[in-house]
Amino acid sequence: MNFARARASFPLFLVFLLLLSPSLVYSNPDELVVSSNKLSYRLGATINVSGSLTTLEGAPISDGLVAVQVDDPFGGQSIIRVMSIGTPPSPKMVRIVNFTACDAIGNPKGSFSRGASAFYKITVENFDAIERQVTVTVNLFDSIGVSIAIDSISYPVPLGRQVTFGPSSLPIPNDAYPGEAKCYANALTNWPKDGGQPYCQEAGVNVTITDGTSPPPGSTPLPQTTPGAFSLPFKLPSSAMLGKYNVYASARYNAWDDTAFTYMWLLTDINTDGEVNIVDITVAATVFGVAVGDPRYYAPADINGDGEINILDITAVALDFGKSRL
Image 1: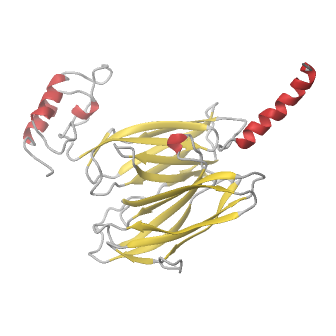
Image 2: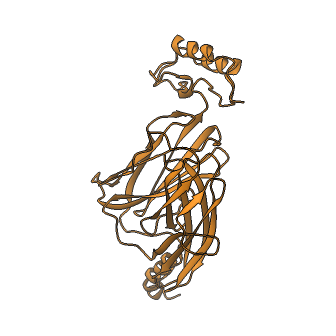
């Protein structure tokens, strides 16, 4: 065997493997941290997922992208967004050329009724030198920030080509709040949960949801875009499952992280079965007297969030005893 020739060929072999990889590869990986501002949320609460993207030395990234995926307790997608960290960077390999709301045959349309379907079209371009696998995601939020519909498709896009997806539908639930809604489209190598990263910053369109009364005050604030940090507030629909939600985050700088939160009907419904009963009392009693720092500490049983499971938490459960979501 000619070892000199083998050594010379090995770098070319590595380059070939990197080109075939569906992920984006960077020479300098960075540090991504994601968390929620609470461990548990009551039904209808505004949830805030936030985090930071820095270099390994701790310097804030000023031109990054972070994809955030939230899955329900059964693994279904509830949220998918790409957050800009400071100034959005230029697209890498794939970009979104056009994203529009439309009717079922593709004509532009910006107003949709509750109980009907909104439609969209999205065009992505692969300006890389090889074919790229692209996961296109779309997430519709109503006027108070409730995630009411989500859609996705994964497809290979040939080199140097533009591909249009749609018209595809997004069903609008009957209890969606009317008013100006926001729809976001993204192009990723894959879902963050599966190691995917964003190709480019997200595209958004405003649509109007009609019918019903005016939305109540207190809509979710707009996400923050500052160097090194991101913040994504949102609400889950009234039909959302109770239980543990997993959050997955990925960045264009070879960084991943995950976290979780519990979505509860009442904070006193500790086991999230939709009823405050003897099971919840038993769970709280089992960890009575345990505080933060103890490996037995169980945050859902700390009803008032004071860092200790004590008589105040037992009393809170007792006061709600017998209440049922059904």
